[in-house]
Length: 578
Image (cartoon, rainbow, N blue to C red):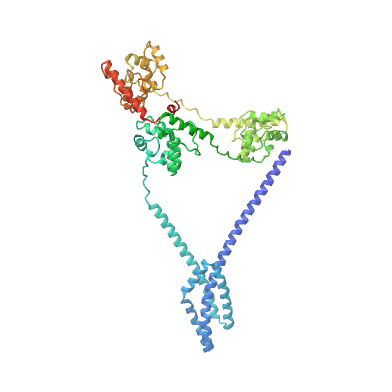
C-alpha cells in the first residue's frame, strides 16, 4: 500500500502544479488584454481631447472679442455663430486626429494645454450653448480617428492583395538544361542519355542515387559508366556554386572514379588525369593518399549530457533493491529500461547479486508506457499483470481487467482471473480476421526460341527445356555450372560456348537487340575472344568470314581496335593499382 499512497501523493502534487501553471497563464492573458484595451482607450481619448481643444479655442477666442464691444445679448448671438465656425474647418480636426493616432505621446501634452484653455474659457464666459458645442466636438473627434484608422487598414489590405496577385500572375521560369559535361566522367553520349531520361540539371543529378543514374543511362543503351558513383557529389558542388570545392574534388578523382583513400577536403590533391606516364601517375596517387592519411581527423562531437535518473519503482515488480541494482548498471531512466531486453535486465540484476525477478518480463513494456507519457495505458496494463507478471491469456487493450493484486482471497483472485481471460478470449475471437483465399499460382511462361542464343542448337535447346530452362530470363539467371549440369542430364557433355549463354540471354530478356547483335559479333562461335569485350568497338562477325587466314586477320584487327580503345579510355582503379 505504501507505493500506492506515494503514487497518489505524486498525482495530487502534479495536478496542483498544472492547475497553478494554468491559472498563471490565464491571468497573464487577461492582464494583457486589459492593458491593450486601456492603451487603445487612452489613445482615442487623447485624440478626441485634442480635436475638442482645437474647436473650443477657436470658438472661445471669437466669443471673447465680441463680448468686449457688444452687449450680453449680442455675445449670445456670437456664441451661436461660433458653432458653424468650428464645424466649417474639418481639415485641421482631421489632421490633428491623424497626428494623435500616429504619435500618442505628442497628443497628450496637447490635450493638457487644451484642458487649461477650456478652464480659462469657462472662467471668462459661462455660456450653456458654448458648453454644448464643446461636448459635441468630442464624439466628432473620436469618429474622425476611427475613420482615419479604417482608411489606413483598407489601404494596407488592398496593397497586400495587389502584391499577392502580382506574385500569382508572375509566370514561372522554364527549367533551363545545364551543361552536364562539366561533371567529370560525363561525355556527349552520356549527357544526351541523362537529359533524355529527365536528368537535365545539376540539381536533379545531385538528388539522384547512383542506381537511379545507372538505370537512366542503361535505358538509353549505355551500360558502362564506372564514374557514375561520383556524379551526384560533383553535381552538388555545382548546385552550391562551389567552384573551388568542385575543382578540388575532381583533382581527387581518377577518371571520375574515387581513389582507395577517402576524400579529405584538407588535402591538396594532384590532378592525376593530367599527368603522363603510368609511374608518374602512381607516384602522384601515392603522395596524395599519404597526405590524406596524415591529415588530422575532424574533432568528434561532444557527447550529450546524461539524463537525470527517474523513479523506476513506478514499474510494477521493481522495489528499492532492484532499482538500486538497475541504476548501478546504467539503467537510470524509463527509456533505457524500455530499450533493454529481458536478458540484459536480468544480467544487470545478477551483477548485483539478485537472481530472483519473475516480473522482469514486463518491465520493458511498462517502461515504454512511461516514456510515451501514457498513464492510462500503464494503469490498464498493470491491472492485467499479476505481481508484475503476465497472465496465461495474452494482454488485450480492449479488455477492462480487474486489478487482481488488490483482491483478497485465493478463490476470489482465481475467479477474477478466469473472468478477465474469458473476456480477452471473446475479444480475440471477434477481432480474428477471416482466412484469405489462397492465391492462384501464376501460369508458367511460354517457352522461347533459345536458338537465338549463339552456340545453342536444336539438341541443346531440347535438353535445356527438359531441365526447366525454357525462357531467356531463366537462362540469364543461371550460372554456367547449372547450365552444364542440365546439359549433362540430357547426355550432352560438350558445350564450349555455355560461358556466354547467360549474358546473351540477358540482352534478350531486356529486349536489347542492338546490344545482343554487338555482343554476338564479338563472340567467335559463342565463345569469348582473348581481348575483353568493349562496347565502343565495332567487331566484324568472324563467323561469317570464310577462310582461316581471313578470319585470323579479322580477329587481329578487332583486337587491335579493342586495345586502342582501352588505351584511349581513362585508367580504372584496378589498372592504377597494377
